Image (cartoon, rainbow over all chains, first blue to last red; front, side):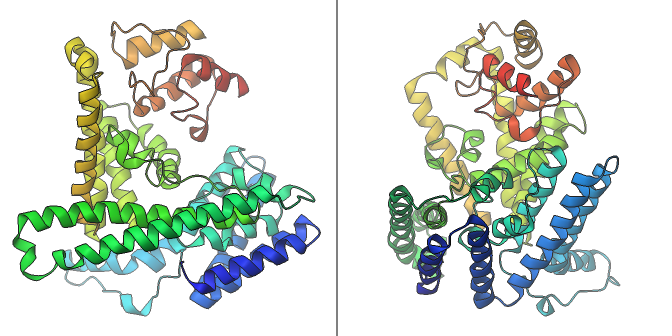
Length: 380
Length: 76
């Protein structure tokens, strides 16, 4: 993302965008440069983005028009999108996992299928779009408005997973004028993001790179430093990307949702997930956690299984590998323990008082950081 | 509505806890209830008041106090 090509597209895109007289033309332009940009990175990406957009838009139209089959259209749409994701991203993993259990199971040639760029993000955007249209939270708008949302190159590769509900009103406006705020806020975030990514994250990566290798692997001290370093590196790297994405979008007058809010300063794992990759954790909460929780009122289900399954799937979304699933489940277990702790605290007045003290809060922040940092062992 | 919500939070979420809850009491940001309890509140609101509040509208920010909950419920 930090390439001359990307910033070239942002600059040219920005100039032409504000020269165009009407929002309708601006939306066409935004869609067009997004698809061209994606084409230059991966020839399959714009094909998938465009085809999926047509599919989702047609389904959304059917949901809006249908009187008594809304739920059928919604389910068909969501299943269709999930199938595309499974086909490109998980088929190889699934066939390998099954063939290790069943000897005759056909092994799918993984290397023959290349995952189109940004597919994981676009599928989540499309599922939330269809669900929000189904729930009546948003209108579908016109196709160009939806295409500009679904293919928007500034947020296509690494999020944030913006909601259409918030995006649509921004591309519906007429004759919006270029404001100096857009330029100031946009450039500030871009510079901030580049600094976090290219200076802090990359330098930390450079220093800890050797610690992961060779003889250092058995040295506990180097191991701890490397893991702590990685923890900071991944935060700076990812939040830097988000800053660049948010800042670049701002230049087009678009306000994209925030994705990070000091996650390493949070006193528990629940608040960590409300501050880390917020657009993803909100998505998991709205479209996975809530529906899963309502399947049963059994406490073991809601306290243990729901967080572990939801976060396990969240891990699986990051990549088709067991270590991502374990990383997600680690966080799910953390969320379960946190709920149990809350239950204990409510019944124990003394414990509740202690937890209000300042030193306890510092200890909680530190423990949460350590818990998250240990989790990165699986993620890396 | 206000008293029913407070009663539900005290009895079913906090399980007869002695914590005093006022309509304006910050529930989630102060750690009195955690965001996992929001699912219970969603089910309760639907059952008790017949209003289906959608998940994206039930956030730690929008449901932080009973007063805020009522504002959201009234919008549905």
